[in-house]
Amino acid sequence: MPESRYDVVFAGQLVAGADAATVRMALQTQFKLTDALLDRLFSGQRVAVKRGLELPAAQRYCELFAHAGAVLELVAMPAVVSPPAPVAAVPVPPSPVMPAPLVSSAPPPASFTLAPVGSTLEELTDGAAPRNPNTSHLSLVAGEAWTLEDCAPPPLAQPLPDIDSLMLEPLAPRAIRRDE
Image 1 (cartoon, rainbow, N blue to C red):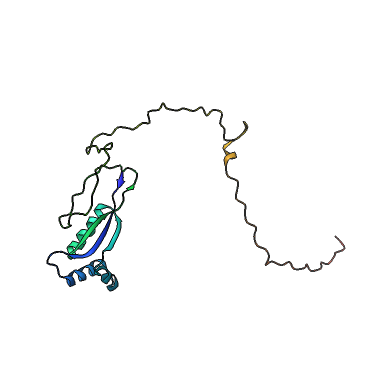
Image 2: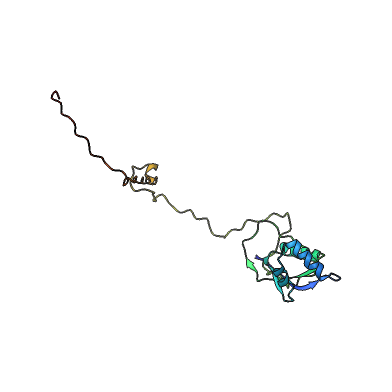
């Protein structure tokens, strides 16, 4: 099932009755923005605050900006196909602080439906007869006389010590004894 992702965009809109200087200061404090980033945010151009968020995270950004006095827009990204989630899908109601998202969501394909929460799901099968291949002729090691030790990896080679710095000293002449 495609996973919906959203870009969170700020176009300079403020909540009705909000003072621009107060909103700037609130956003700067809340998000620890530098003056340069704050100027870019309030440049009058559409600025993507965050990209590729899931709906709950995108709505959280909208709530935080709305609390500071700014209005964000949600822009839907193309859907990304992901593996099915093991939990049931629960619709997330839009936040009362956030304006209605600017998203057009198409209904899911007619061949897919969601089961009610708590219902028992059926096991999917491919419909083919189970395959039981004969593997008796296969062997890990050729021959009859083998043990699991034959499958062990070879021992690691021990590195030779570096003896280049060693020197041999000549032996002192030895006196020869007559009784030897």
